[in-house]
Image 1 (cartoon, rainbow, N blue to C red):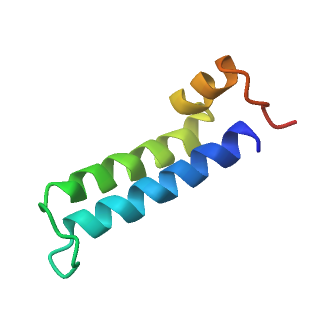
Image 2 (image 1 turned 180 degrees about the vertical axis):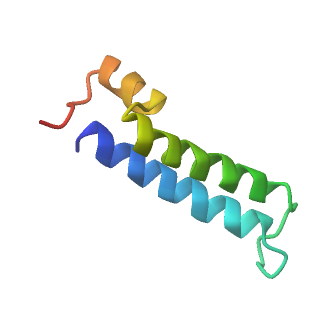
Length: 69
């Protein structure tokens, strides 16, 4: 997997997990504050779309994960 693929998979997991923990209708509900984490992930995805820079992608590249062509 390339760095951008890993970033998107991790972002998707974070969003689904935080929605499950933050939605009162969920059987896994913990606190509504988890929805703030959902917004944080969304804002970071939006920012990386405009600036073409993502901190997690940079960290993965330094760990030796292959960047896309």
